[in-house]
Amino acid sequence: MRIALDVNGGDLGPLATVEGAHLYIKEFDADEVVLVGDRSKIEEQLLSVPEEFHSRMPIVHAPDNIEMNESPTEAIRKKKDSSMVVGLNLHKAREVSAFVSAGHTGAQMAGSLFALGRIHGVKRPGIGTFLPGKKGMVFVIDVGANVDSKPIHLLQFAEMGEIFVRQVFQKNEIKIGLLSIGEEEKKGNELTVAAHQLLKEKLDNFHGNVEGRDILQGTTDIVVCDGFVGNVVLKMVESVTSVLMNLIKQYIGNNIITNIGGFLVRPAFKELKKSYNYEEYGGVPLLGVNGISIICHGNSTATAIYNALKVAKRMKSNSVNERIAKRLSGGKS
Image 1: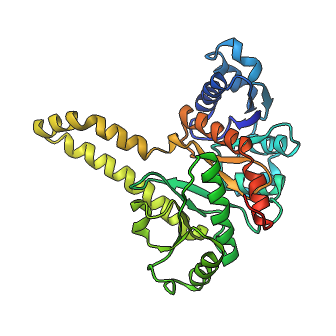
Image 2: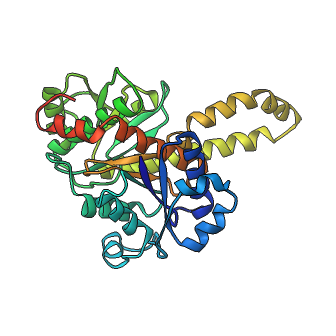
Image 3: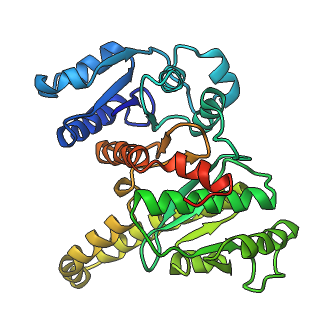
């Protein structure tokens, strides 16, 4: 399998992306990672990678980068030499089987839809993310691809999210919840009430409405919502997790007693941080586009990039897009 990796994108740039690609090809010796970005910067980072791997890390020169403050659609249209556009065009031409980036999320969504199109039957692509839950990670979709959705869109987000989680993370028993302001099926705005009836009719594993507090409790494995609400939830959880970790460190360092206690519970805190760490999941796909476009956290480390590449491989190996097309055309997946 060949995967295109955006080396210019992300806060850590070539330093993290090249090392992440190195970690990946060391494990999967039949695969290639095409490094898309500024050739001179990539070659500089490749000096720290054993030469035996260089043949499976070919470079495609793309000197430009789409900055975070740029308009997504305008940048995609104008910056033809950006690593984002060049990488997506490689995928469009089927020279690679997937594209992975930690760059401008909005540009990746716009560029993926423009270059790859939609899977037949998909009304709108959606992006999900994993949030920490009491019983394991919870997949929330949509978290920003669509700020104005219809009930049919939420149904398709649920169906695509279920296929992704089941196939890529090998989870068999999956419960799906609809985010609302109350458990009762008549609670919520017009969209939520109508979507509840549709999900109830179409999904055998629909749990019903869940509230915001139920996400972290792990009441369901998948939570469906429109992108406006989902993005607010995502940013809130990210900030709360960060604040709590910092407060714990602050209070532990207050005196010798808490310092001793902190030392004793350090292994538990390490496991807790790991379970909440986006690096362990790497990246998530823009589900519904006719290709594999993996969106990574902007601050992705080498470990996160490595895991994002693995997500791309699993999507391809488990025929996620083919299963989505079959499901949405009325067949089973």
